Image (spheres, rainbow, N blue to C red):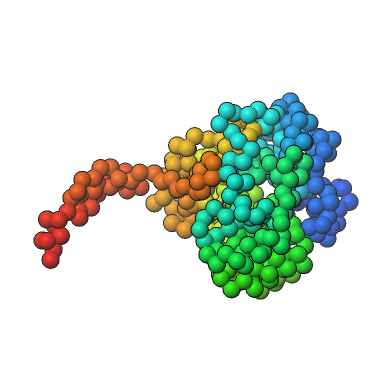
Length: 389
Ligand SMILES: *Cc1c(COP(=O)(O)O)cnc(C)c1O
């Protein structure tokens, strides 16, 4: 297995076949997303075949199975370091006992989605756009999943998308001009099902813009087949947001999948979640955003970790996010800089947070500081205005 010194370097590598070397897996099987899905690592036994687990992880795997299933595709599993419980990929995907602890501020539905559903499965929070939950399954389960109340299907609550009612709501709600397919992971649906959903949405005249949120380009790049890209390209303008948190996740296979999507004319964005011990430094974020640009993906949002139950061990202070943005802005390409946001607890939507570059201001002058800490005066007072006329 490759040793990973790529965490802060902008280099692409493949980890395959990694733990599967010598296991009689042909390259064709490895490249087949159905094989990847069938061979996901799910049980304690299977995980322990490869990783030396800590007590916190063993208990986590045993105790969290009735809340959020654990599953990891072989492709993604190969990115985990066998002997390092602090591995940034491992922290995202291998359960830990801390998931069973609930901080008093944490919730099962931290973004207040259930109370904003005019139809089950359709979240209508903002005036002109909706979030359409089209499946509760993912290829692998992020341990900080904001929708863990329904995702993976093992918890008490279930996603019960009312398909016909949802389409009728969209047909009868002309203010909706933007539909975002999410879940779960929409790209886990078959090509035929995805196409049925997209074509039905495209028949609605007031829907101008379609998007898909998917982590499959990262968890299961094999799913990004030429056929899938061809289908998606029939429904333009269609954007796709991926979810990538760490530079190591951008392997050569992932880059190739993203290139196929970009070549199909699909603008790509990335939504990452700021996670303690995963990507909470400027160095890691810089490598991540630079690698994303090389994959033709625009960093879109950097999320403060939602107050989802059992995620306190992965959450950072708000200040960390501000410091990361400050460490990027001005120091690197503007296109590489995501917007740091908090999805407001209770359903207020995404709220942007920015470092403060205004040192002080009065009605005549604003004193600003730049990325180097140098100060500059921007005048706009009445007096000056009349001088210039
Ligand atoms: C994030 C989100 C959207 C999309 O928000 P943008 O800022 O337009 O990307 C829409 N609806 C809901 C409920 C969301 O959580």
